[in-house]
Image (tube, rainbow, N blue to C red; front, top):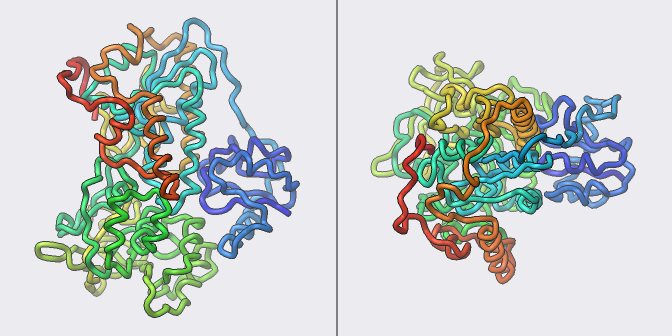
Length: 559
C-alpha cells in the first residue's frame, strides 16, 4: 500500500518533514518546491507508515486503498511524477533552516497582513530565540484568503488554519487586528517602535477587463463574489443578479472554477459548509442553471491546475462539458488535455445544471441596458492576440495588441464575473512597480528595516504553501541585516505605543473563532461566520473604531 496526495494540498512541507524515508517530493530546497501544483509520494519507496497523514494539516494524504473513484486519478499523477522526475538524490538541499542565536537585545518585528504570507513569515521569525512579532491587519479576523478566498466546498484546504493556530500559540506572537495601517497608525509609527516592518499585504484588488460595458449592473469581480460567499465583512451587504438562467465567468483559473462550482452547487450541500448565511440565502433562490467559462487561450494553456480540474470533473450532480474541442490540439498533449478531452466527449444529461468550458474565446464587450444581458465574444486563434482596445489578458498573461479576426456572437447572461487575476495596490512610502504589481526588492529586502513577502513581493502567483519558502527568503534577509547592525533600535514599548484604539488581540480572535465554531456545532457545520464588523467586534469583546479617538498624525498614510 502507498499513500497518495489528493486534490490541491497546501504544499507547506509538513508531510515531507514527517516522512522517515524521504519519499515525498519536491522537498524544500529542491527544484520545483513551491512551484508545483502539489507534492507527490513515490510509490516505490513509500513504507506505508502513515506518518505523513498525521502531519498533513489539510487531510490531503490517503492510503491508496481508501481512495474514492473520483480520487483514483491522483494515484496515476503521483506515479507519473516520479517517472518524469526520478529524484535519484534523495537528500533535500535545505529542509529546516537552523535557528540563529541572535546577539544583543530581542528583535522586534511588525508584520502587516495576517494572511498566509504574514503568518508564515511570523512562523519563520519565531523559530529564532529572542524574536517577538506583532501581526497587524485591518480586518477583525486573520488568515486572509485562507478564510475569505478558499471555496466553502473545499473544507479540506481550509484546514490549513490548524497550522496558523499553531503559529498563533507560539511565545512572542501577538495580534493587532481591526487596526488599519494608514488610519489607526502609520508606517512611521511601526518603523519607530520596531526593528523591522515586513509587509505581507497581498493583492487586494482584481484586474479589470478594459472592455465596453464592464461597469453595467450585473458585471462584477469574481474576487468580490468570492469574498461575498465567504463572509468577508467588506462584502456582507453585496447583491448579485442570480435571477437569470446563465452566468458567464471570464477567465479559467482556479478562482473561475470555484465560482462556477458554487453557482451550480446544490444549496443543501453548501448548507453543510461555512458559506456565509447571506450568500446561502441568495443561492437558495438562484435560477442559474448554466455557467460558461471563457478562456482566451487553448485547452493546453488553461490556467487552472490539474487537481482542481479533476475535482471539477468528478462532480456527480453537475454536467461539466467542453465546447468545441480544437482540432489542432491532441487530446493526449498533456495530462490536463486528456481530462478536458474526456469532458468534451461527454453527452449532456437533460435537466442537470451545467458548467461549460469554452476555449479560444475572448470577450469583446458586455451588453445590456439598465443591467447586463449578455457578452459579445469572438474566437481567438494562436498566438491569441487581442484587439488594440484590449488592455488586459483575461487569462492573466501579458497583454497583446495584435488583431484577432473572427466572427462575433452574443452569449446571453444576466451575470458576468471577471476572474482574470488579483493585483496589489501600491504601499504608500514604498516603491511600486506598476507593471508587475509588486514592490521592488532584493530577496524580500526593500531596504534595511523594511521587507516584503507574499504576493506584494512576487505577484499573485503560487499556492498557500508557496508562501513558506517565500517567507524563509525574506526572513533570512531580515536576520542578515539585524546581525550586520543595519536595523535601528526601536523607541518605546512596541505594539501598544501610539495605539489610538485597542483593536482585536489574539484572545479577541480566539473568542470570535470559538463563537463561530460553537454556532457551527449547533447547525452541523464547521463554523457559522460572523459577517459584519459589529458582530465580530461584539464576539471579540472589543469596541468599534472611532469612539472619540483621533488617528495618529504621524507618518505616511498606508492603505
